[in-house]
Length: 174
Image (cartoon, rainbow, N blue to C red; front, side, top):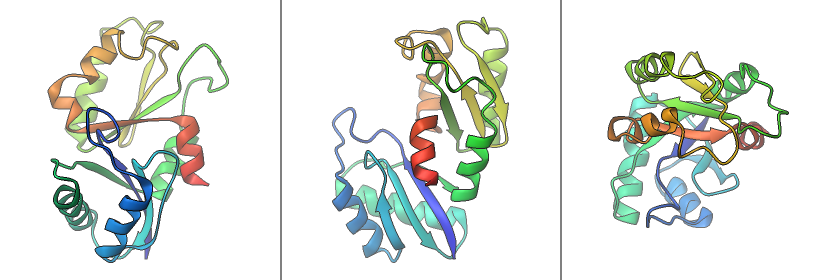
């Protein structure tokens, strides 16, 4: 059995509200073991056998049916979360900045984000890449207004990425 983390996209913002208990119920109803949520309900931890693609499809289908929205998740292993934390290349103790990890559904998405960031001011939008993720370290209060924030908000990326603060990831990793 693999320890998985389902990172839900776009919940508890924009009108889609999913409570932790409801999310656990959905997970249990489709046979996921030891399901629990961390912090906001957009973070589901569970154990299951099976391929990533099959599990992703099963979870998205169940969420869509239960909550009547076009559910999208990024499914990663708990080890992949730990690797993303360990690889954070910026000063996570810098109280003036937000330590973000952008999880990408596809490798081409990750490459496109890194390419888009290459032409941006690295002081305004510090960005670095690693397998499956893009690290971003914007100044607090600018996470919706920097050039990279605007790239991330584009439709192509909204549907294929999800962001988590490094502090949230540390709680997920336990």
